[in-house]
Length: 365
Image (cartoon, rainbow, N blue to C red):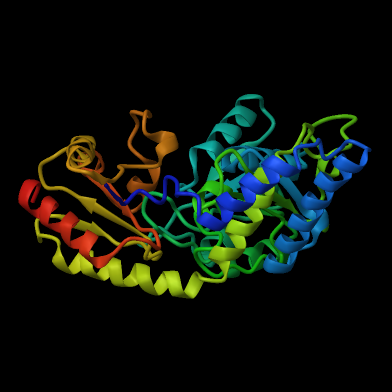
């Protein structure tokens, strides 16, 4: 089996799996329990927070462990929203994950916010000028993802967050596809979310950061766990595993980027000219538009041949509507239906890319 669907999920690394099993077997006590065994579990959480804080250069006070990217996005958005009749506009890019739109649509239907979709340029990016001009005295929150999971488009977060700061507007970033994959600077970010299974950690575990400098509105009353943000017993083994997987990948960002660039170059220079290439900035993701075959048909057939691909985000695979991120880069609906996504991992090889290209060129070009 050749796996080219790393944007959907990744295999747990040996180090992440090892620490998960060790903690699960030895430190299974509730981390909120007052006895010694509970204290030991709590110490593991504290150490994981410290390691993450030092790695990302963010304060431990802002860390909240979630069950994944969707919960992190949705909880982060509502926690940073401090709206009033005079300040209820939310600026959002058209390339966000479905979890973002689900939350915003619900709040808009309730009459709590007004959603303003930011236009993007021909490269699918929100320009600093566009964001600057869109901000008004009514702007309550800005939401822009770092890396798009369908196209690999990378937003200019470093410039956009400065504009938000200068206008005193909180800035939330979906970093699920970006963390430990591209260099990121979290200074002046009000909040961001990540998901462990995107960087070789366990599923069902994520991280939400809410800056201590931001005005945060807790969504639950009388909650004394996780800085008062999220109630419930935390998954100690998963959190320990997340911290290990994050560090392992973070230290290999440049090495992995170079490897992805080599794989992507091999793909785009070898694929048939009848297959349209959609090249986002992030080398770990490459989109292809087939000339005559539906994307889902291609993915199914290639899966039968032992090659794992995807069409759009796994979370949106059952959504019959055309993917908005593909529309934003100028693809017509007929092209979107013929789109497939190739996403690389550190263990993919040039030989595997050659096999992929040969199959696509032979069967679908």
